Length: 309
Image (cartoon, rainbow, N blue to C red; front, side):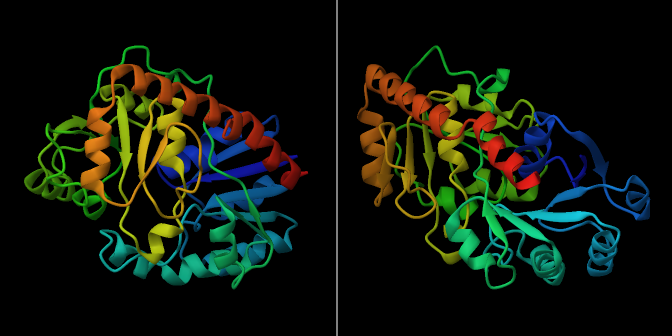
């Protein structure tokens, strides 16, 4: 089987949904950096892309692929309509029509969970759940070996409002990992949120950022868009052997040792700060076992193989 995967960038979504999983599948796979008419010459059996194809006449392009016998799969990991306050709202509005067309005209849609799938159902009823997952054998995702009691968060630039939910809740500055020098959104956060900021790493190494702290947090503003996000923060923290305190809303519905649901962040941070090193390590390693059992990329790739074959 000849499969084309479209890499639209180097962000985490491409790594988790396209690049890493397909690097572990035993097919004839071609990575397309961008998209143009040369794709037709490959005669792919399947073409997989994330969210939308980076081409102006996307609808016509998908129709032509299907006409030539290529099965088209669109993978999405959150909602295509962003919340009003989201930093990428303007860009998302610009691409809104393309995002909807990608969902409507693709043969099949892969989503991270059922809640998102039910929303996709309005546009395309042929959707299937392929959860996010991590490779437990990859060097960047090996568990911590040295524990203290530092609280921290790792992620991208779009979480200003989420992190501000915890502002003023700490007795000592948390670690915020993923900082990009010169980015105006990161500067806005640093100007408003006191923390120890750690520079970002590329997607093949960013798991090491979790080694900068011992207890992870995942605050999330309660709005419609955020409920369609995935539980990736739980998977990342757990794979590194860290316990995590999460907002008590969807998508953080996993329930196991090492996951602490938070309704009030002042109370939540206080509880985290009172944990002993032994409690942190015990909860972190229990969460690691849960994540390896439930979100191991080798197991989740079996779901991909079922859909591809």
